[in-house]
Length: 438
Image (cartoon, rainbow, N blue to C red; front, side, top):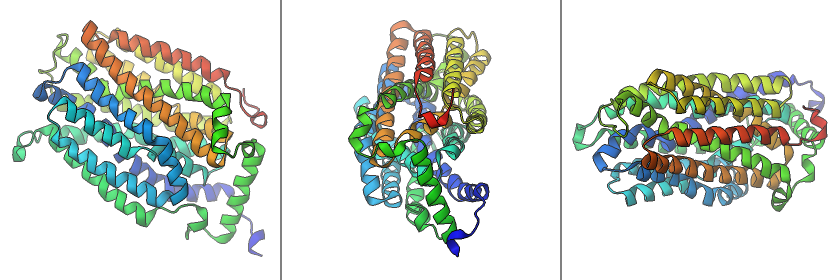
């Protein structure tokens, strides 16, 4: 009988990984490039549009307010209408807004378009993370999430050279280089959004590339996993707000996001300030050269994200991996604050980036092990929503402190201290008994 056919679980998960992860990875790369390419455009935009550090920090961060306000509603709609349709909608609308960033002229238009970009993208990341739980049980999830999340670091690897090349189009067709950057990087998002309608499936039951006995085996494995780790106790959406562990993890995630977006949105300007050798001066440095320098931390972060995800799954351990990564990030930020030149700052930012991005696998494996159903949708969306607030306050306060003190050191020391708090909070998280993790 079909139901009794033997299934090689390792081979099946490898098959699912080959079919899903590269495509989801590509979607997230273009999403992340559109989200953070303002960091590469910042030097020329600030000079041509006469934006202060405070204006830039507020505009870069306001994306996350739009994202936070609409993240939970978007994720709940996704559960109702299905992944394929809603992710396509998200990508098409945010691609349009991303391309329209080329029309920025004033601080007000900068704020408005960045806010709308956040609204358009809301629900994408929690939707993708929730989607992975439909295919991978918790003991396979950290590796799957880590491979997917490496897109956030490789987006810098890919986005740096692309942005560098586009910035050199300054003056072509009457457009500035930063305008070409927004236009050229927004169009692929629209096209990929259309492709989602034809490529993505809403779950294993709709995957024609899985045999019936593979679908049945996977369904039993996922159900066994939910029962083993007690996730079945939390079905309702409102249950997630009563779980202290979710709030603790939300606190850790907020700090992760503060660090990630200080790197994403301020790294080019931190390196520029050291390259110019004059405090507050950004006109002399070559924006395209700095964009190439900025790819190095992302390359290393991508490698270590996969390595740490593998290690976390190999030892079935989450808290220690998470705490160790945040401690490493704290060291990197503190070192950046005292860096005397570009080379040292780049090394320090590499350490901070490795620590921050390597949290993704163990963090989301720990979170999605806790709850299922509507509570999973609500929990993931709540955490990414609160993380969005971190994405706003980190870049904004960095800009304010930079203008007030004429130095990046204050903001870097602050986020380093927060990273140490997140490490301690990670160790305080109590996990389901069945994990037997330390």
